[in-house]
Image 1 (tube, helix red, strand yellow):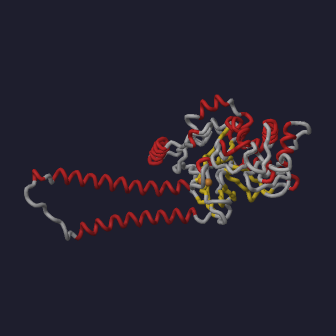
Image 2 (cartoon, helix red, strand yellow; image 1 turned 135 degrees about the horizontal axis):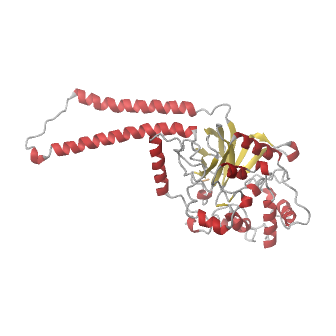
Image 3 (cartoon, helix red, strand yellow; image 1 turned 90 degrees about the vertical axis):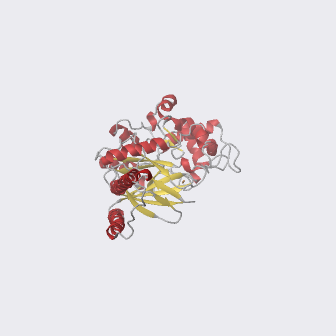
Length: 419
Ligand code: CUA
């Protein structure tokens, strides 16, 4: 049903996923080292760019190998027996082997050895993956209906740009070849954090902080989703992981720490939008009450952080990307739940009590202001990934026209890492 809403991406296709998983498994079994493309990647736990997933793949390989051997062995014995002891060839009662100690011991011992072997492999993987290494790079994922905020405990905002931590909504930037200590929690109900190509899934539970490790060796864009049913837009609670090589990540990090939202020039639409953002209209409905923008007085915590909104490529927690963001931004601010079911942002069309009605001009001004919230070029992670990885999604500011985006994404967006 969600699929029928205008502009929402198609849901994942199971068949494509299984086929991709099968292909990935095949290349895994064949020892291929280049499983996943960085960008048009399928969502796969078999992505060997992640050390976490490599551990899992060893377990999957051995469990599947035993399963296949046993399946073939049992099938062969069955067919042999059926053929050899057909009733029309054997009139006499069949010989019994009850009490054959050697056979019975073998039939018990072999499965026990297999189970012990798999258990040892599992314990070894657990010892390697838990606990998260002390030097791992920390990132906090805070889940809420229906978006993610990602905080960087190691990135304190420079004093000149304000206080607090660097935070971004729905798009995480991580360094490659680095263990990331993800810590998940939630503000309202239970959500689930999972970026399958990067490693394990964890529940995000209110009042609980869970830390585990994810990592990837390959720069690229990876799709993440909420994995626990958390309400009407559970399926529209997505995020992107943008993995940058260390040097590029460091550039992003210092630009983000120094970032101060640009002041809009007086008399421009952006300045009018800024005024609405900070004060609302007619004394109510200030966006700043719920959203934070680094370097301004806006410090709201109830909604996603908008500090880098103009550099982001997604809207509505990944419900729209690229040029589709421009198509839907107006209606999104005006009445978000009309295009994303269950969205908790108040409506600004007069239908939410005590909230102002914003005119089309007000909305356009707000959009103009939000678009100015851009990281400097050296910190723009989408520009970086587009330069590094052929075929990566283009940065928001360079998005193609809606028609060309629709032509290329409608068939393939669902599971391909969201470009
Ligand atoms: Cu959040 Cu499902």
